[in-house]
Image (cartoon, rainbow, N blue to C red; front, top):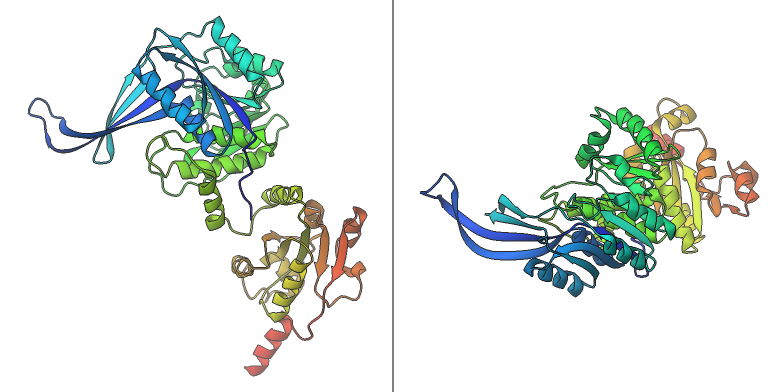
Length: 469
């Protein structure tokens, strides 16, 4: 099954607004006599790296190498923040200023946030900041701009231009009200509210798509990823491709830092040359895990892989399947493809699927939809609906992936999957009878007919049932 790539050789540079997130925990059982507010009995405090610093910790948690450039004050908060990051393995490039380190203190009462106290002042980067960035960026694979509108990346276009000078891609988590502040970036990841601040209110997918296309064109981005909370994510490209990713969020506990997790996973995936579609899928999964935690949390490779093994079904859509199969091919794994109705799964099916799997490493099943079977077999078929047939196939150890098709034949599906080996059950006399055989042979693939088991068919099973009645 699909797993998270190895990021151990990735080197990512973050430039952005670093901050200290402080959590002050306590209990309350009465109101103050001085004012109608709860009296909180303080019990403990926790310091965590926030903002761009949380992006860094997310990247470390995913197993990549990361450096971070930010502005801080010459104060105790900066020392605490620096210690947190360095102990986790983050390389820090802090520029010290006369302004305070951004610190957000949250008072948590009985596991609920009561109030947040912010200590901050707008930063103003100087020439030394950009010189340091230009010096360090050459050592990294790509750049993440983590903008929390605290002034560190107020001149994002200058940062993007410097990165481009050394052929480094830039990923941006934005906050500024002018989209042109990020002109020339590789990918920009606004949430829906930020996106609508740029383009106006969007009431449906069509409006997001149309306004997103115009925004990409005017800003010179390669990709725009709009994160939409419970509605998932929408990816638009400069080539006018659009993909909507459904949300992986099930139980939302705290959305703090979810955007940090998204940009961190995107950066890691793109640093090892994963496709943009696959990168967004993993970012979507990581975000779903992050919001199930309290506070500014990180997500680990193990958590993502556990999610994949526990939640990922074997059946998927064609775009996702093709990307998954590409990752298997990079590991030199052979793809075997077969197809059928699998209306009533029987001994013949199970035997030939085991044999098919033995011919390669990954077995992909193409399964006819209900409408397709209805056209091929008559209006009384299928006996078992598509979703149930797919669930039954999913339970077989020999089956790795399942994809449904609505056409009468799997010809177009085979062209998209491009299997190494095309197989069918043994009730065929020649490979020339197999749909798609010529296409598979044209690129050097193999076509096989497997052993035949007499009288093992759904049609015969139905006949026996009817005879017994």
